[in-house]
Amino acid sequence: MDTKNIKVAGFGGQGVMMFGQILAYSATKDEINGLWFPSYGPETRGGTANCSVIVSEKQINSPVFKNADHLIAFNLPSLDKFKDHIVENGLILYNSSLVEEKINQEGAVVVGVPVNDIATELGNLKVANMVMMGAYLELTHLFSDETIEAIVKKILGEKKANLFEINKQALDAGKDYVRKLGVNYA
Amino acid sequence: MARVLMKGNEAIALAAIKGGVDAFYGYPITPQNEIPEYLSKHLLANGKVFLQSESEVSAINMVYGAAGAGKRVMTSSSSPGIALKQEGISYIAAAELPCVIVSVMRGGPGLGGIQPSQADYYQATRGGGNGDYQLIVYAPESIQEAVDVMKDSFNIADYYRNPVMVLVDGLIGQMMESVDFDYPVKERKLPEKDWATNGIINHPGRRNVANSLYLDPALLEQHNFKLQAKYNQIKKNETRFELVNFDNPEYVIVAYGTMARICRSAIEMLKKDGIEVGMIRPITLFPYPEKAFDQIPKKAKGILTCELSMGQMLDDVLIANNGRHKVGFFGRTGGMVPDPEEIVDAIKSFNERVVK
Image (cartoon, rainbow over all chains, first blue to last red):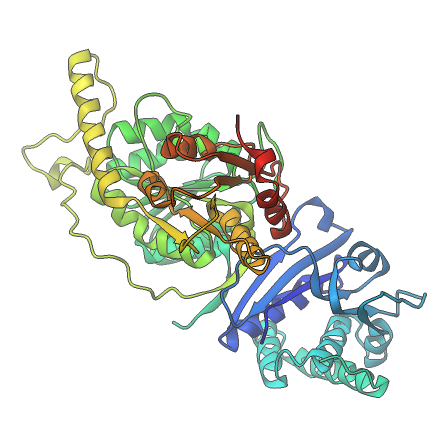
């Protein structure tokens, strides 16, 4: 796997940081290198939150990057803020439940997934980030289902083990949605 | 233990436990709070000491006391907090007591901000405290290196009876990386702590005193000579650096910590543009790797010092270079972190950056 620079952004509370951490945990589990870096500071409270993730088979050098290979935007402000910082043929994945207009970005593959609507249909808005994760993995094939599910299980722990099922459903629903769209990225 | 993904601050805390820390004293400040948070959970549970003091001044003086008693002691803080600790640090260095100080730098001066910075290079290497003293200063560039250095730091402090500072920026503290805690630590034959002020019952017939007051100037001068001899020993034995892409560099970057990693990416980008750039990456800031500069080829066009500050290590680069090459500077500060493209541009516009 080539080095992938990934930007994840959205409102605080949408599971943006967790989304990024799951990728970095998965990289570590698959014995490649993972790096996760949050935007920390006052802006994360109630406002927008973002994190950077780098996964690579090689040693990770700079923890900061100018242009992301993949942008995962959970709301419109995040999309506006980062969509111009994408590499040629990069991927922009956004939450079309909160972004009404049709998004086009030259030189990038843009995919909208209504993750809030899908999560609400499943009965828990909180798993919207896992719907997004399913869609993301279906497009990029960065990590196997086994890896991601093992990490989700580990994060939920024994206390919240009962929530694994709905997270799994969310992952599958995200995958299904993208499959039906027929978009091919990787 | 296989590799785990861990936040820098927590990894530093766990590495301190693996390094044998007996006691932690500190006062909260962003962006290093995960260090005391982690230690508060894990030190007390294992019969060790964790104490959140009422101030930084108090914390460093508790470090002084516990180090005097022969224990493995540490504190951690960030820029303005380290500033408050300087008096105690000078006393500990004067009394030749071992301890470890973790400094997670944020933007300054004053209260500054909470984003990553390297503007405390002077504070770490020139001291905010008084007198002719030195800390042994490590500046790791990754969480892995921070862990390796941290595990070793108590041995180094004990070996030289000197405070060790582990200096990172807020980015290393806040980010998560895959890290392995199992790399072996260099074996050192550590002297008995027969100087410890741990009660006459432990050293019958001998009175041990931890002190930094020498009112007789002749004695104080002798004490300084002794300290200086130790610092020279440290220079000889403990200087560490890495040379990156040093086969035949057209330019040489000097950078440490996070900035060095950003420069690594810039060096790869410049290679694609046909520009070969090497890097001297100091791992110890005191002792400074002056000898590394002897390896810069004569025909190199110049040295670019890159820092998350307005130019502090630049002084040591100028000293080590000793007028041999043109020296330029690139810096971002106040919590701003450049992307590798900015370093690429800085190399390409080197002549505009030469320090006159």
